Image 1 (cartoon, rainbow, N blue to C red):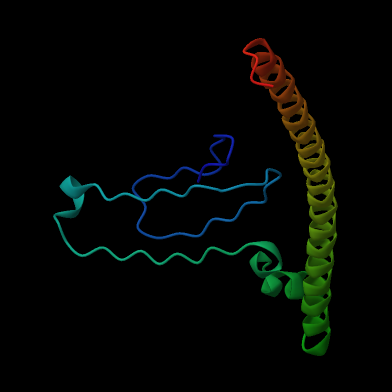
Image 2: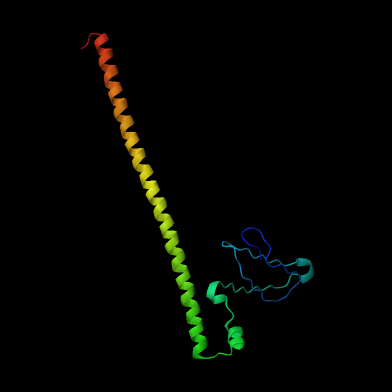
Length: 144
């Protein structure tokens, strides 16, 4: 398993089954690679079952229940509390991203407005210069 910045989080060779878990500090896409060495397997059938969990779903609630000696309704309440905390953190993240996107949108809007005003000014200036040039040209040719 490799992190988005290329850090190796887990590496294992010659395993037939296993479980790994890791907590990350880096946000992004993680890469998990699996391969079968065809020389050692003899070309048989290969099954890979992958259960990739993130966030609150990745927490091992059985070990939490054993460690804190809780069961039943209290364990379910802890699960719900964890889910609510995860939702709250996600909403705060989305609120921050929305504020950033609003700032970017307002900056883009201001730039487009200035570009439009400059384009209009340039068009008016060029039109005035064309009229002045054509009037002068026709006066020299004695057509006006």
